[in-house]
Image (cartoon, rainbow, N blue to C red; front, side, top):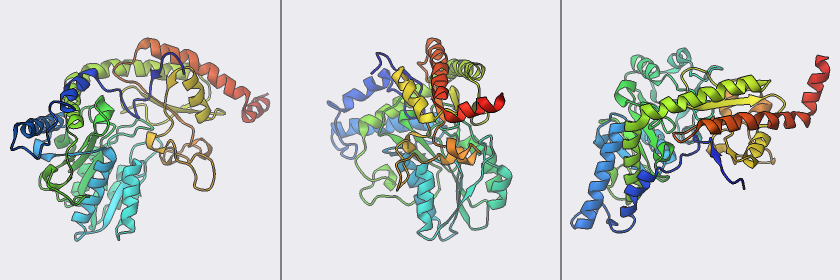
Length: 404
């Protein structure tokens, strides 16, 4: 293992902020009460802590505290949104629209609903990664009950035009319910549910320096939702089960810090990301960035390199102490059922990346503690890695011969 790891994989997770951990610690030991047992003082302390965290998370996205449902993660929140909204509204219709580049927790959930009598269609995206709004408008029907389009994509970094999509959807079919997966957006960029106009929104604590095991679903007041679990009446009956109080407290504190520090964090991250982007473009030939260069997550740089296999690039980077990503964290172990080979990214395929590259793109995502020295190190380290891989590539050799 390298002595020091440069962590440029903030798409998969972020390190827990020490200030968040400090707030969480008492709820593992002395304040161990169950929020549902609020007759005695220990239960009351836990309940007040959960209520405070609900207020902090709501403030991050300009929602009401009563509109926040805590879950175990973004995957559960997305399942709750897609399944819960679809089943609560199936008497009105069974048509569902999602984008081509949704996270698996939305895509596979929507596809599962097809076996339950629903009809799911995918709205295409352009080569820039943005959902095609004209196609969306054409695809909305009278029986469309749910649309789910993510706010930003971790693989290609683009921030989707969700506000415009909501306006189109509500104009075409006012009864449609609109959900957005903002797990890679909330706490990173400004998110206001009222400005977006969405009815439901997913957010995840570990994406903005909070703990794993804590996430939330925003559900606009009056929106119908069926729960996934049968049990008690926690989370207004939408999510039964004893609350993970330490994680929820941590999510609340991380949300407070994100709201307060976001402008300064992003000024720094955007500058470093621009330096990394320009440096890669200057130093590496045959490099192709993925997703639009505009309207991206701050510090997000994604690309593929001709004649260099992405998994090999990641391995060489790791040896040099650089953590990066290829595809989403949830798809990194996905392999073809009958063959020992990586399955290509549906996101990259949707934006027109060549089929043989779709399992080998690279994503760097910088964080609030990233430094200019780390960016310089990556820019010094990656070009020789690419050169080494080219030297082992028959395709690269053939290209050079053909150029002569």
